[in-house]
Image (cartoon, rainbow, N blue to C red; front, side, top):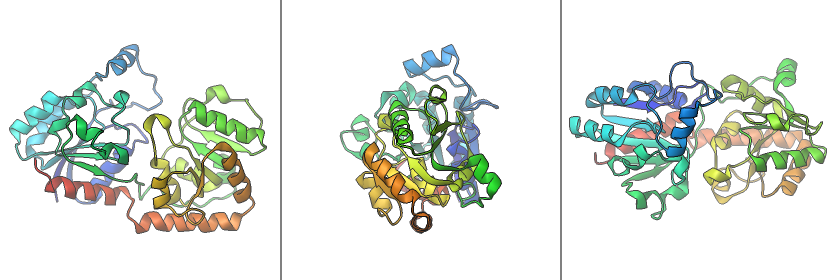
Length: 346
């Protein structure tokens, strides 16, 4: 097995930690370097300095990750930077000098052509990576990341965690605490809010979990806003206890699929997803997932499938089987990345 330096966020609920667990389960010797201080949460408001640095695309190294990386890299076969935007190009060049055979791997779930996701540190280091891994298939276009100096790219689908994203037993207490006719888990965006409000105005009961929704509280009696995120087991309980789980895509990220696209089926949930060819190639329409192109079609789909519990169960079971059959767990995806990285030229 490989010796890996793995750099990324350590906030509760982070998918970085899920990938870290998968690598260790696979038997790799992993040194983890966190980029977030102990106790940090995604919900913590950024300081004024952090907001300014974000606008300048110069994130602070709050954990001395650069120094820790330089200390660990010479003993590693490969280093995986999981959206580790504070690691500088100078650090990566020094690591290469100390360990010429070291493979450098970038992994991110964001659209890295969007400047808000690409720090100046990372932008200066693009040609240094042995392998650039993305869940955004369009980033492989020669006019996108390759045009910026990325040498070898790998597209992977989003993934689920075997331990966390699994079917749950839904009793009366779970249904009361987490359940809904239609639910959405995700951060506030204006388009999402308008779509959900329209569904509520049509008489469809909606429950929303996530950050940024406080302004939507009490907007409509059919729209129940929890105004807090759910992670890990509670996230799986929401999916299991909801008749319909919505999967909106993020325009800023030019999404064709998102983490929920895979996690909802893995949890055994019934998913209604924004329609596009990429996600349609993963899940067969009306057999493994249900799709919509606009809010009016979404309303029709919700009404149709709320009246068909047996059909919902059949679709959910088939979708769960599909994510297992085509290998969409973090374990399988990370093993593919490690294998491909070791084959790449350092």
